[in-house]
Each structure stands twice: as structure tokens, then as C-alpha cells.
Image (cartoon, rainbow, N blue to C red):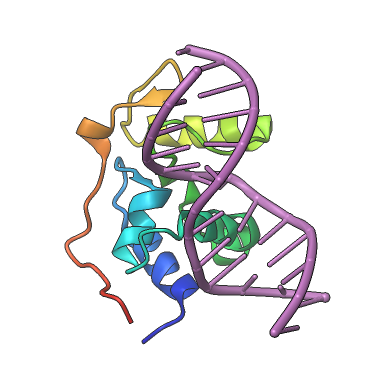
Length: 107
DNA sequence: GGCATGACTCCCA
DNA sequence: CTGGGAGCCATGC
């Protein structure tokens, strides 16, 4: 067993360029379907320290979840640079949603 | 142990 | 489409 936070970090690191995952799905893959908020919290506090590809993480609607305009713009730019098309600040989850080959079970 | 925090999600008006 | 409200729970002080 590993801390939920580490599971989350590993999953985020496993997201390939040009793909995105929602907070909810990351939480599910970490074995905790209702921990979407914890995922958010992890990013809020650890993204910079761990150099995580947080720009590949969006909310359930495929929109950029971050509030700060500056970072939001950065994420938008980074995603398009990886080939993700963003229409009306919305990403087509059908096309870009990523399902990891592994999944952490309940621990 | 208690309490606040959080870049969420789901549901309904 | 927007907005509000409830549920959710790991983490840190």
C-alpha cells in the first residue's frame, strides 16, 4: 500500500503527452472514486515541487479547472503544444481522455 | 482527535 | 447555458 497522494502522483506522471485525465478518474484509478478533491489539493500544493505535468489534468467537463488566469493560460498553451485541440476552453474528452493501463485497487 | 482547506463532481432548478 | 447546494475525504496544523 502507498499513500493516496503517491498513487495520484504516479498516475499523473503516467499521462502521455497529448492526453488528459479528469480529477475524478485519477481518483478512481488511485482506488478512491470520491477523492477528486484530494487530487486537486495535491496539485495545488505539490505541482511545482514535483514538476508534475499538471496541465494534463482537467475537470470532469474537459475544462481547465485552475482559477488563476496566468496558470490557466499556461495550461492551455501547453496542451495545444502537445496537439490537444481546445474549443471554447473545452477539451473533447472522447478524443483525449486517457485511461491508464494500470489501476490501483483499494488498499 | 478536531477543524479548515481544496485546481472536484453530481444533481436539480 | 448559469447557479446553488450537498457530498466527498486526504492532508496539515
